[in-house]
Length: 235
Image (cartoon, rainbow, N blue to C red; front, side):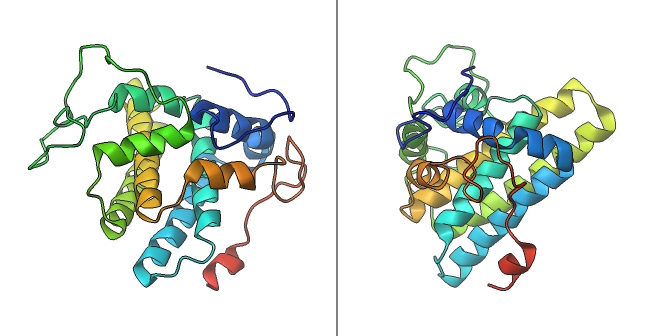
């Protein structure tokens, strides 16, 4: 796993998915560890996914870039809290093919009862950048719709919340593996909705976090930045 250590160079649209996650750790890990529980972190992902879904339902795409940046940023925070590399886990599950039918594009006619287990090593290299990951998911699932993907995204964040609660109660290996699985599904569906709306998640995230925390422009964050609940609910 790469470790993000400094401000110089920061990130751009061609940075790896791991680099975006490492940057989130560098900016927010101290603030998050001091102030937020596991459930709090998941709730912030949910807040911004709610905004994305509402925007899709109403056809109102104002501030949509912001909601995607914040939803993915808080998802990175969840992954960092549990020391999960989203890039590594995504490659295990989606090695340039659908985990149900093992084809790209997906050839599933009916969802299988469980995901396929791939015992073979992927014959192609993993995407080099976060932007390439989004393109890969679009290549696997080119027929996604914004509405369908948004509903699926809502399902996945609910399942992630459930898995985090289960792990908090049990602290067992099986529950932890489920957190990995659901975190990957949330990010995959964020990519899906973004692609349907022609939003480049890497590009908008690189711009939003270009100077570290977008509020105080410090890295690590010095302001405990969060978006205002009342502002979110008023739109």
